[in-house]
Length: 450
Image (tube, rainbow, N blue to C red; front, side, top):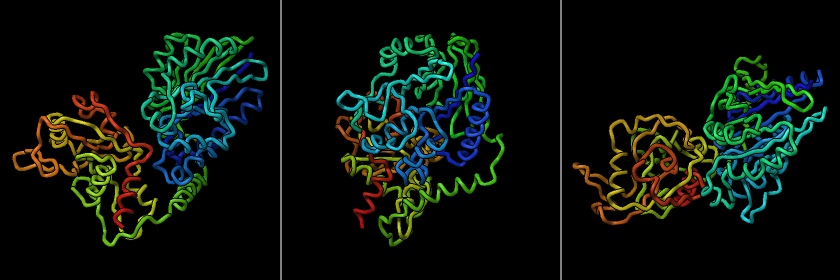
């Protein structure tokens, strides 16, 4: 009888306050299992890196890779925060110093080849000869990857291509899935050969796992709140039992120096970002529920960057004021979102429908989660080259909106992924501007002004 222990993390999103405790826990578990000759594997399922944190931003994500190295990860797959929040060269060199495998089957270079730092699957062998096949898949955002210079294939089609050779070489098959729970359930039904799916992306928490047929699904929530553990018993290369559990990180023994460690990571990042961009001659105040000069400046930058007729954004995107010497750290602090500019062609009637929705009662008070937004509340609608009179008539660049005319509207891309403007945006062809985030175009505007 052989005991195999699989530990997994997902969607940490650079919430590094809990990381010292997680790392200490994993180190101890590894030592305990190895002491009694039990197998130990450690996987991350993506979105370990999130550029809102100064350490991640300042080190271009490579500091996060060092954290994974120090913890002795066996393999990782990538999430959308690794995949589409770095320029091409940023992702292509992100894993240069890794001490683990990057397993991902549905990402290719533009020439149709896998990049050198990636393998579609890997077969690991235990001391007793059990073969564990591990394959990775990441969420399907083909247009955004294409704009950055990558090819992303459909996850299930890629899985169909690899499942037969994987099955022939493996006694146990594990999928590292940054696809979300619904996709994981579908894969379990369509690919019963897969024994275990370690999941992420939708931040699902499965305290004892979830069974779909004979496949065990696992998920450890988000932000390092849990560490997942799947234990398998194998006899003569056949699985006898498998079970999943979660460890609540806040219930793990605290470390005396964990606050100091996480503060030091923050300090390192802040120091790297202490690069002056400009000096402001006045204070630019912050108020998410008012049209401030700073929010207007960002809205103007958005329109100019996209070369659009008009633009709007939400005041909640600005999280603080600016004054005096402005550094990269300051811009990250007030605009930490991995959100890109986007331009959408609309006729006058469609534009009117969208703009009137932004003036609905309760719009500014909405709490927003996900979609790259790292604030809390929607905030006031901020417009550039869009005005309204007392009758709510709309004017674009001083001219009354013509319902039959064609316009281009620049918006933060978060409005194209969620539950906003569902009668208009899904049907429209959108132009995304990558790899620049909103803070990059604010930097560009401030430098331009100075």
